[in-house]
Length: 345
Image (cartoon, rainbow, N blue to C red; front, side, top):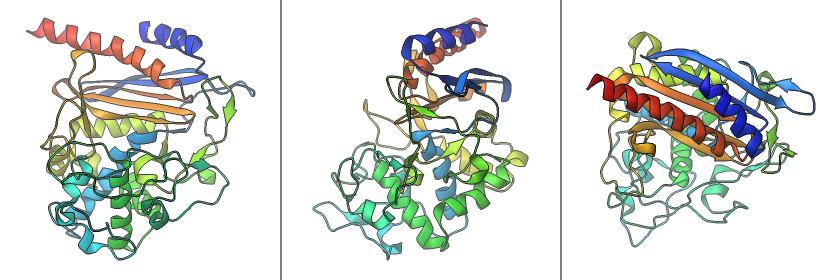
């Protein structure tokens, strides 16, 4: 199998211990490959139970929870979010704070700061959401604030998702991780997906740096933006549901029409980026897909979905260098999808 061969070669070349990849065809998981080691020292192979952190792919899952707020009429997509916040509010600005809405936050068009987060080593105390939003993060020390007029440009903002995380907690009076587990993951049948590192996720892979050295897992106050753990089986299931919007699989988590709305582009967009609600649009190798990629120290993940053919590829790696592996696999997959389209024409 060519993808398996390419994966093993790229892993060796780039010092990536473990990779797992799922291929989706016609809205169904066709096969899953498990390559290399979840833990090198213990010679523990990657398996269907192996848990990976997925970095910014977390945002797509988070968006499902945020869209539930809209469906449950906690708020409307185009209402100012600041009016619902009490624990922390967006500071006054030269730009119009009342134009920061959930629709714009989820599509990176709200004009908000903070691209991403570095997290903290597992076992260290985490700051509060309010402290993070106020800029007490070690990585950049940047507060979440308006840096352009909402609705005028696409600008990637992990900070926006942290603000939405606070919004969910304020509206539901529940912790974000708990709400997501009870209202999204369990109903979707995602049994090994969690924003925490609980005892039930003891099958976690070990994370490795660029030199192939093991490092501690990262934990995040900013869970919605970067803090999700999952398995290839759960992520592939989520990818299939994203593609098919099957009412039975959705299990009342979202309405099919809500999911379809999330997969539509939101204006404005540019050469810098284009997003729906949670889902990003990508055009690598000339193939237009939706999904997301994610990079945290020691982890790399990617989910590419080709909506017209209900095809997809999902890849998880336990290495900072994992993007070099998943891009090689993506290229091969994209080549096949494009070739199949030419045949149909």
